[in-house]
Image (cartoon, rainbow over all chains, first blue to last red; front, side):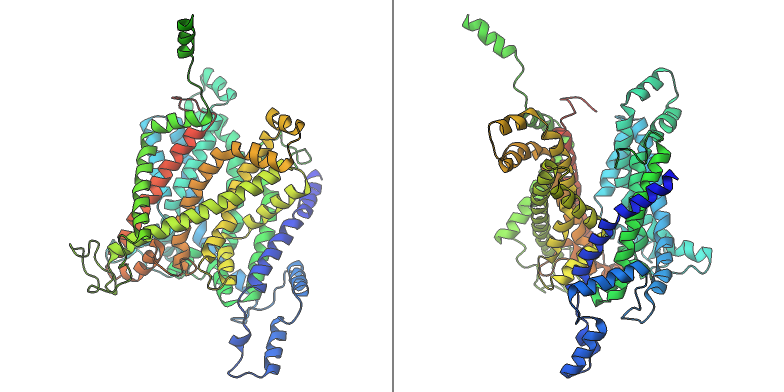
Length: 321
Length: 299
């Protein structure tokens, strides 16, 4: 019961965020965005034709009214049809979001798990050569641009100049083997660039925890290092770890990975959203931005509930609000 | 008598401030010094381009297509016969221009917003700033940048504005947290009790005490700006005129699958060098300015 009350309160508290995200995006992407009037008209249009098209696109209404139409669409989650392809926006998202998820999830999970693993090893041998090597490699990884990593991995693994094991570009999930063939190179590039940042972040969190009194006490009582790290340290590090992971989720679900999708020609939602901005496909834009804001509110809710699970001392009704 | 006094003073440790300790520690950090040295070399190269000493021929189509590295074309030529060495040298200037503009302005905006919202924490102004930061954080970065770039049309600073509009948030959050702590200190109470105005307290008394945060944040933002430029230029919403490592790398995507790597390698290696050196410098700066760590200590 406490949880239900809390959820409702938290969702209501999320309304200002949704309002802000939709308002700013609406102004930027819709009001100041590309004007499609003349794209849809033939040569030498009459003023009446221009009027008609503007009315059809909704350009003739005042800004406030257009924003409230958007809010209504958001409330009913019905954004109409894409202006570019005529496809229903919700169908378009339902088709492209799973592609993006399949594309980025393996890299996201591996990047975080390996990051935590390396961070634990580095923290375990803090100050020694193992730690210095891991942190040095992290710094190198952090200095390499994602685009460079993508091109390098494609060259080494997919092209005729390298091993040529994987397809150069494209996407297919017809069979698990196809999926594996297409997802491997993007995943490796993702893990490569994420690992440096993740390892560094998690190591800082773990080292901070290692200096606490309860860890020193446990060590004094002779708890073996591995148990110390996994039970006494990692468990207490869960709060920052949860925050980092959960808040990445909305961006992954909705924006996918624009760069990977553009570079490899993968039909995911990141590419759809980007094309919608460049062509001014307003229904798609409105849906993408609206969904991101809603997911962020849910991510906030989820982190709070997970905090509670990770640390029973945190009260959902408490002063943490 | 005076000899005793002299002995006493020489026995006292030298006056230690955050900055004198930081300089002492930084000068002992070998990686940080190497990083700073490399960054200064790049800065020199960029200044030379800016003053017109070299790389003035970056746009000339002078050589044969895809020439290999030679005495005339140090890094070879690209697909239309332009000298890759000049182009990558010229791009150093672009990198510094983007990095400096974005880092300085984001840090300034972050400092002002963070200080005001931290000083008035809990008030309506604070809630407004915190709300704005949450909202901007919730819009996917590349979509926001693309939207700003398109709404500004052909403005050559569209990319800078887009980056600044998101990069100030990190600095602002840190400054806000620090100011909330600082405003409870006695020196603030003392200033208030002698009738110093609120704005003077914020900008003359409190904000200078966050300078160490601002310095570190501006180096982090500099690196972030250079790295974002590459991806934005590839997506077609980056540098509009001129040349940059990002433009060179996106140009090279047409070449690498045909087996011509010069463009790609030149831009990647030069960019990696600057970013890596800047990261090393930034880390050393962070360690040196961390008030919690002690001289010589490793924590």
